[in-house]
Amino acid sequence: MALVTDFWPLFRARLHNRRFWMVQLLVLAIAAAHTTIETMGALQHMRDLYLLPVSVFFIPVLYAALNFGIEGALPTGLWCALLTTPNIVILHSGAERIGVVLQLAFLVLLSAMVAIRVDKERRAKLAAEEANRRLATTQLSLKSYIGMALRAQEEERFRLSRELHDETVQELVVAKTALEDVVGTPGQ
Image (cartoon, rainbow, N blue to C red; front, side, top):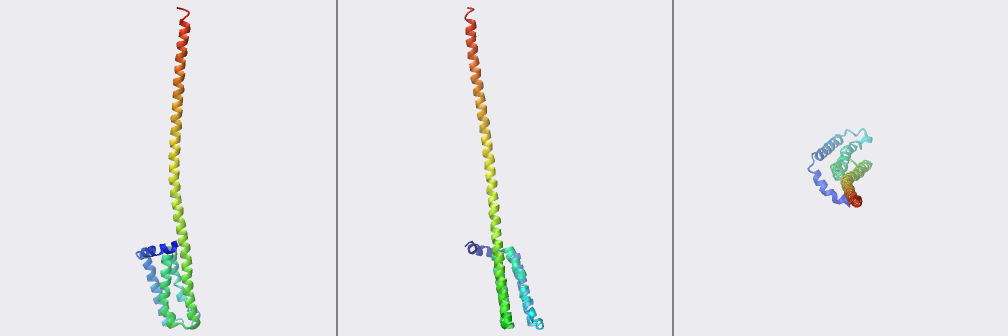
C-alpha cells in the first residue's frame, strides 16, 4: 500500500530532477540508435544479435531503479517499451517479435524488482536513522535524569549531614550544660 501512495508524489518530485531527465534522454538516444541499426539492416547478417539493441536499455533502466526507486524505474522501463514498440511492429516478426517483447517484459520486471528492493532498503535506512535519533534523545533524557538523581542524592546527604551535625552539637551543648550544672552544683 505504501508503494502506491508514495509513488505519485515521488514521481512528481522526479520530474523536477535533472538526473532523471538525463536518463530519459539516454533512453531516447538508445532508442534512436536501435531504430537506426535496425532500419539500416546492420544486424540482418547476424540474426542472433537482434536482442542486443534492446539489451542496452538495461543500463538506464537499472540506473533509474538504483537511484530513483520504483518511481524512476517503472516509467523508464515503460518509456523503453513505448519507444521500441514501432520497431517490434514494423521490423520484427515471428520469433524475433516474441523475443523482443519478452526481453522488454523482463526488463520492466527486473527493474521493478530491483527498485522495490532499493525502496525497501531506503525505508529501512530511514527507519534506522529515526530509531537512532530517538535513541540519542532517550540517552540525553537518561543522562539528564541521572544528573538530577545524583544532585538529589547529594542534597539529601548534605541535609542529613547538617541535621546530624546540628543534632550532635545540640546534644553536646545540652550535655555540657548538664555537666556544668553537675560540676557547678557541689561547689556552691
